[in-house]
Length: 478
Image (cartoon, helix red, strand yellow):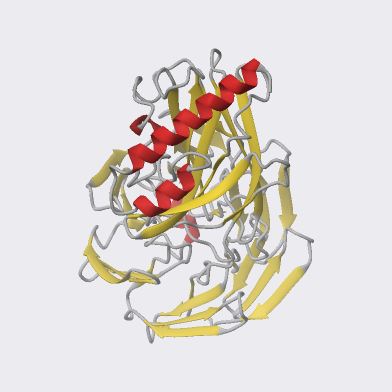
């Protein structure tokens, strides 16, 4: 063994022993942590909710104060059930000698989600460990003693695969900690960095800047101009697309994670879509006068499909973006209100209607071709389906103008009722705070009111004019 290799190995041994000793001070989960520390970092130090970070041992510098970084590679803005996503983690520090990392993936409740697959390496440079955080088990990918040598001068990159769960789980966030170590034989003088990224299950509607957060946005029928207030930089966008008499049909038609400007022209049954990926336009006749656009991803390819519902016959017409084939299905009657959404978490929009005369929801689930028939609501209510509990499944929801109450039957969190808004407001629920949960929201003559899903307060923003259509209203029945 060369002198430098011995020196590096000595550093690893010292850090490992130090991690074992430090774990004894945490309590409650010592057994899990000590076992993992024998061959790599202690599990549970990524900086995720409920966790410390690696400065618990490497404490000379405050986290994220050095000149280096830890970075996650490209994470798609939205994921499909069962999708295999390549993950890369890079720890960089110009003057470091060895490098380490630890990463986990959790849902909005702090539970592990998805599975990790490591490449075949001899000797292995990564490992999977686990521990318990706030009663939830979490799994981690981290380096081994053989995986700390830099890929190139100043940095080390690890590559592995994360597989999404078989059903949507709402917002999933990846947390990672990286260590740029000086290899001086002690845990001192090392820099610790943390980072995180999220992927969504398609909950961020009206999202014009690809940050996973729904933007305050309107379409002005009198001029055909779209206005959006971006959350990334509070920037402002305005572009003309459409004309008076059109119906907005926003959605991600090109699969880039950004909402595309789209309208349906009832007079001719023509769709006009401006793709945000700069690949051009969709202009096609699909539908007839009197049809209702029913935006959604019916084939589960993360691209919205052209789709209409014909009230006169109760027939749905869908042109699938994956293969340009057609689905024609009779579902509903002329007096129903369409409530299409992904109710079973399989990544595909389900055919659904709400019948005002009886308050009954009828849902045709794509996951198992079964039906959900549920009475929820009264005549005079307005349906406001959305994922209000962040589990990746759309929930039954209605707004009652007679008392201004939102009644939600959440698929995981259960029933709730909230008074919010006025009978004359335009309903515009969407995820405005980026937590993966649909927020209760209304649009009132140029002013937006949204109740944060964590009940931490109300968002009030003046943006738009009386007569404008709030973009999130394009996803629900008017």
